[in-house]
Each structure stands twice: as structure tokens, then as C-alpha cells.
Image 1: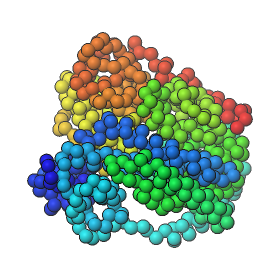
Image 2 (image 1 turned 90 degrees about the horizontal axis):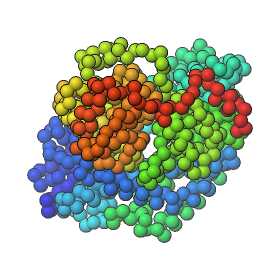
Image 3 (image 1 turned 90 degrees about the vertical axis):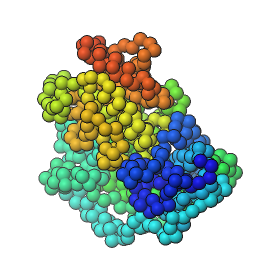
Image 4 (image 1 turned 135 degrees about the horizontal axis):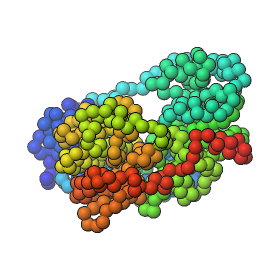
Length: 623
């Protein structure tokens, strides 16, 4: 297409507005599966992002974002308080990087589409694009590359507007102050064990820890909405205590000092961006203005809120006086918690809910090292080493402060030799397919707003890869595919059902225990996910599928029809053409009985018992 119109649609609700502007001279690019699903239902031809964001774009966005952030990072060290020297830097970087990656990914997609179709006009939803980031980016690109803009509407579209939170904050502060007052009464001099959240199986871990600490009382700094009823019931019965609100309000001159530090930091960043305009010019778009706008508006408020939350955290700790602290992540107030515990010599352990594996490839290494700072490599006195891979990964990281303790799995389950529920679970979950070999697919895709290049699939890649698997499974007699799915923004179960190949060889599962689905399966199939290590803990083999060959989460036996394949705990298929031969080969080997008997699991599993001896290391070693 030379000339014509190009429209990028990022949200499902925009389809009805833009539909009347779409004709035979218009190319539609869908940026999310929810949009693709809607367009398909309306019989509107479209392209998804697969053709415009591939392996090289993954690499480029990772390298370019790192280049910009590392140029800025030295200025962030000025944002601190007496006890907290790093939480602001890590949290600032985390949010800035997500924003920067969104710009980079969208610009890559737009530029590739322009190179492919050579349009003379972009169609944008509204002329008032200040509240629609995608429209902002499209307009910036159009202005920089002399492409016309046609607006679908002159109206100002607001997503929902900001809700007035004054009353909510006022009531929240009352709740917070009341709980600080009530805690000593409810606690009754018990030994508090403390966590910032009740997510990722922390309540189960606290149940185990409580058996080894006399008169233990689990305390949570925040709770999920889904578990609020349970936590309140536990508080009323004296089994645990939860802070339902953490105030961000600080009525102190110290906040003015902190705000001045932030403003000085921002000025340095502004000067750096001006002096390094080449580094922040992408696809001929100069990004200094939008990046500074995000820093001065969004990030400034986030840092002020974090400052207030940390002040409230200090008050909580002075009242709770925790015997031990455990956290599932190190971001925001959770990162500050680790720093404060180090400063005050409180035994505190970071227990990652993610998977950490060393990589020799520089791109994979880079992304996981960045990710580790919010989940594994932080300023907590101790860090749990739940697998041999995590231990190797930590040993390769730079500037490690935490003391690693071999704990074995804490937030995900380990194999129970006495668990003989396999037949029962297959009957319960896969009754009409229990005589087949069951492949469980469990992956983690990322929406553009939370994108992590290279080591995770985009949503379109996730769907495309599952469709590859469906076609292969359908061609091998005796196989059944169970797709374990967790809905996310831009990808609902209805969207997935609409976009997957129609076949009787699979079903989608959203409810019930993942552990039970895993125990009832013969093979886990994934691209990159914590489920890979969970599967290995349960002695379930893993097949990693990446059709463009860019990434292996764990080094595996690469299956292809060009060499000798051998039985392994971990397999890798690194091209689309090898997937069907690989599943055929695996199926035959399983039928021949060449499965667990020959497999060695020790490289994936730490020798550890359930006696919680690691708690003694936390007590005895100086923080």
C-alpha cells in the first residue's frame, strides 16, 4: 500500500468509534488481543503485532531503555532519607522503565507498520489526545515523519476521570491511627512475624513458621481484596493482624526537604536529556518532553506517596516490633522495609515469588538482572535460595548485599513423596482425557503496559505460540492439551477462546489449584514462567517452546529432527518446524516407559527438609 490510511487501536472500546473510518484503503493494526477479538467479531480485517514486533524489537527496546536509564541513574541517588537510601531509586526506575518501554515498543510497531504500508495519513481517536498515551505517541511520530493526521472525533474522551479521594483518605487515616492504637491490645505480648502483603502463599508460609516460633502472631501491612474477609475473621479471632490502610500523609517540614531533593534530581535529568538528545530520539521522535512530563507529574507524586508510606511504615514497625520479617518482593515500601530492617538489625528475608536462573546470553542476563532488583537482589539482610538455579543466579549478580540461605521452596510447593493423588486428580480434572498423555500449558504473557522484553512473550506471541501447540497436539494421537489461563488486561478468557484454533484436543482452565492440575499432568509446556520451576519441584518434565529461538529459561535438551534426542527433565523447542516432531518423539518415549526412571532432578531441587532450620540462621547471624 502506497498512501492510504493507517490506524492503531489499543483498546476494545475504541473499535466502535473508529469503525466508520475504516474502508478498503485503511490498514488496521490491533495492539491487544481484546481488540483483535472485537475486530474479528465485526469482520473487520486487521493485523496484530506479530509482524511488527519480533526478536530484534525485543532486543532493541531492552538495550535502548537500559542505555537511557543508566545515563540517568546517577542522579537518582540524591533521592533518599536517613534510613532509606535505595528504595526511591529502585521504585523510580521501575515505573519510569515501564513508561519508557511503552514508548519504545509503540514507536517500534508504528515505524515497522509505516515501513510496510507507507501510509500518508494516520487516523487518531480524538484531537484531544492528552489523556490517551497511544494517541500522543502516534501524533509525535506523525509530526516527526511528516504524516498527516485525521481525527475521528473532536470530543475530549476521558477514561473515567480521577475520583475525589479526600473522604477516602480521611477515613483511611482514622483506620490507620485506630489500628496503631489497637495493635498492642490485640497482640498481648506475642512474637510478631511481619510481611508487607498476604499474597503468593505468604499465609501458608506463616502457618509453617508459626509452628517454630513460640506464640507467633502473623502481621500483614496490606491485604488483597479477595482475602479481606478471611483476614478480618482472623483478626477477630486473634489469629493474625492486618493493617487495612497505610497512610501516605506526612505533615512535616521534612517532606519539603525531600521534595527539594526530587526537584534537584529532575533538573539534573532534564540537563542530561538535553545534552544527550541522540540517545532519547527514537524513530526521529524526540522524547525529552514526554519523559520529563511523566517525571514531573506521575513520578513526583509516586515518590511523595512513597515518602509518606515509609513514614507510616516506621510507625508500624515501632508498634509491631517484629521478631522476623518476610517479603515476597522488593519494590516501593517493601524495598524500604528491607533497608529499615538492615538499619535496625531486624532479621528480614526476601522470598522471591519469581524464578531466577543464570544465563550466558547478554540480553537475557541483562533483563533478569534488572528484574531481580525488585524481587531478589535487594537490601534485605537475607534472601531465600529456593532452588539451585536461584543460588547460581545470585552468585552471578553484582553488588549483592543479602546473605543467601538455602531454604528450598517456600512460596511454591515441593514434592511430597507420600502424595498419591495423581489418579484421583486426573479423574477429577480430566475425566474424559485421563487415558491420554496430558500436556499442561502455563505461561506468563505481558501486556504493553507491563512489558518485559525478551524473557516474556507479548500477548500476541502468547496466543500464536499456543496455536502452534494446539496444531501439533492435534496431529499426535493420544495427547491432550490443558491450557491454564489467568485473565489480564487486554486478554480475557472470551478473547482467548475467540482467537485460538478450534479443536477438540484442548480445553482452557481458569479455576482450581494450579498444583493439582500440575500433579495430574505428564508434561508442562511454557515459554517463561515460575511454573517451570514449580513443575520441576514436582518431578514433572518441562518443554520450553520459543519459535524464534531467542530464549531458553532453563538450559534444556533441544529437540529437533536433525540430531539425537535424549530423555531429560527439561526440553527446549526453538523453532516452529521442530514442535510437531518433538511432541511425537516425546509421546513415543513416554509410551515406551522412558520417563521418570531415567531422570535426574537434583540439579533443580535443593536438599531441604521441612524442619525450618533456616530460621535459626536468621536468628543467629548478624543482620
